[in-house]
Image 1 (cartoon, rainbow, N blue to C red):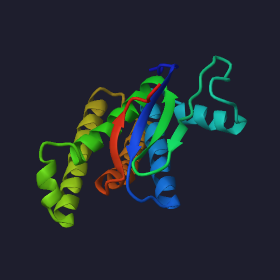
Image 2 (cartoon, rainbow, N blue to C red):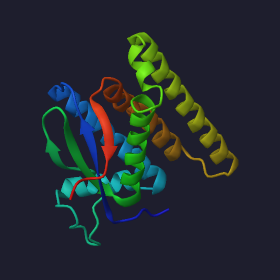
Image 3 (cartoon, rainbow, N blue to C red):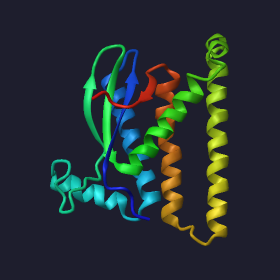
Image 4 (cartoon, helix red, strand yellow):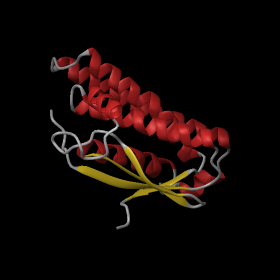
Length: 186
């Protein structure tokens, strides 16, 4: 399946104290999830990103005017601050929805007031429970794909990567470092 070649942008609101390694881990995890989502949507997506990175072309300078690379377009440092990201159409929309889902589940649920009173161990248990639920969903999707005879090693690896690299994202949200996901301001 081909992905939408238009650029799509969104903003992640950040807060709290960040070290350089926190930023590196967070943006690396975002990129890995983006690549896994892209690979699930279009075979060879990772190769397209790698090729574009090697050529070091600005956004929109591929022969067909597209760019596969996830870019940090703008950063506002401070607490609170934000990171503006853009990437390839539907892949980036799915990344935004995934991060938004993490924020929604961990921070903005109706039980937020109760969650703040829970001990760190209880919050970690809820996060692990959510991750286990995501794993069960992925397993169900993999079983459905096997039944439909569309399952292959590439999809399995992309799904495993997506699960693995969600952990640093969930960690940043649970530590209060990611507070919201929304549209960029004009």
